[in-house]
Image 1 (cartoon, rainbow, N blue to C red):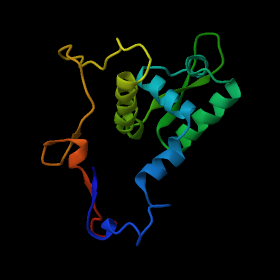
Image 2: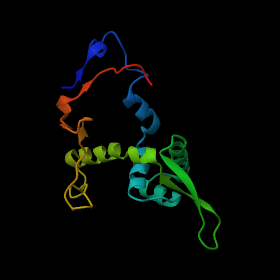
Image 3: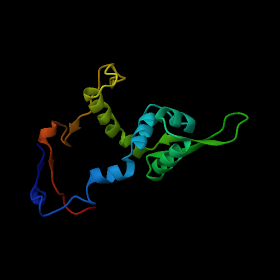
Image 4: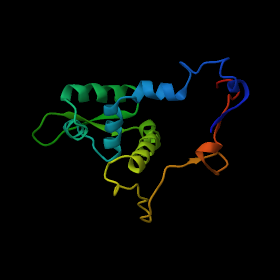
Length: 158
């Protein structure tokens, strides 16, 4: 069980509504198609038609989703032009988009362990070939189990 600490411990005296990082993340990328676009971006997809085909949504829905992900800074548009064709945009991960990767990878791992999907799929360390996992570490470098996590308020927002 996670432990709320300090003033957060009295759950009747405060509300996380509107102030919770999970709520903020869900407000920004809380749709299935947004998460699947991010998955595809990590897999190397950059072209609009490829995103639409691999995510399985209409072109109108894909246009809206890509625009949202560009607006919040997870993807950026870059122009490209194939010989004899008009200029188009491709969508590439930003630094913030790359920082979001552990969220998608954690969902991958959770779904792989509990779902009815192809359980042969594994995250792999390209450097040595071993299976990779998503882990939580404290700033001192210790692995932290889910039941060892607390939530507390820090000093003033900087």
